[in-house]
Amino acid sequence: MEKRIFKYLTIIVIATLIVTTLVLDVLFYEYFTNMGNYDLTFGEIFTASLPPMVAILVLILVVLYMLSTKISKIILSPIKNAADNIESILSGEEVEDVEIYPEIKPFVETINRQKKQIELVMNNLKEAEKIRREFTANVSHELKTPLTSINGYAEMIANGMAEGEEVKKFAGIIQKEGTRLLTLIESILNLSKLEDESVEKTYEEIDLYETIKDVVHKLKPQAASHKVNLEVDGEITHVKANKRMIEDLVYNLIDNAIKYNVENGNVLVSVKNEENNGLISVKDTGIGIPQEEQDRIFERFYRIDKSRSKKIEGSGLGLSIVKHIVEYHNGSITLESEVGKGTTITIKLPK
Image (cartoon, rainbow, N blue to C red; front, side):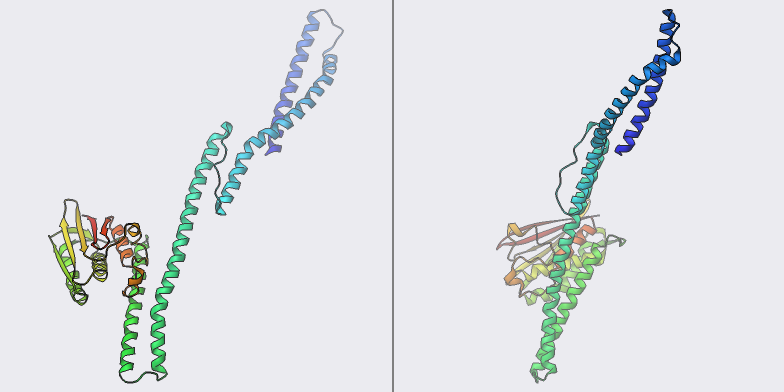
């Protein structure tokens, strides 16, 4: 870059100097001729003016070289800084914006905009990698627990360490843990499908109230076994939605409300018809959620009561699936909760 600048400036100056020398020689010749001095020829005047012109040319070339070096630094410095900054960003370092020189302001501003976009992409990649690692660790743990149990009881039966009623008991535990494992795998697959943006969205017109009543009916036995009263009320509410997903959404909300409830507690599922939206509300009288944890309950595998969660069966993905289903339908989700009094989760689905 520096050599090219020097080359172009040199060509321009030499051409200018030659033209200027010729013009001055012609002017001098005309001047001396008009003064009556016919002894000097044009060639003599040119020869006489050549040494100072060469000296001037050499001086100009030196100045040009210094000037081209300075210009190239002015132009190349921010470009080099930008390249170094981008390299640093890709390495995970934080960098300042490239200094803006007035001469190349549009170019540097473009570089700085690109730098910010690269930083955003890199931050998103870091966050995605963090989520992936956490998800992998959690999945490994959740899969290992039932598999360890299944393997242990199966080994005891295979080695003849269990007889009679114990075999039946161990077989029941293996079946229970196997069901838990299948539920977890199914939840992971469902979550993966919901996160796949390439999957085409499919909707149909459904009655939210009738759909939710069917889910409530299926969960009545579970509520009874936990000594929880489960009720539903509302009105006919038509929305365009994926019926299977809405069933999964409501199932997970009610399932959570039952599991984290208190003995002789209540769960009320309500459906309300608004002008542009259908509202689903699930209200329970359970243990409630601390304020500082309310922003995290929709994360994968996050549980508010670690000691109690160990005793509660489930994949730990239910509310994360709920969140993704709401996003799939371009809806919104709000949560109100108070420790010791219960939780209300409200879903708004556009019609």
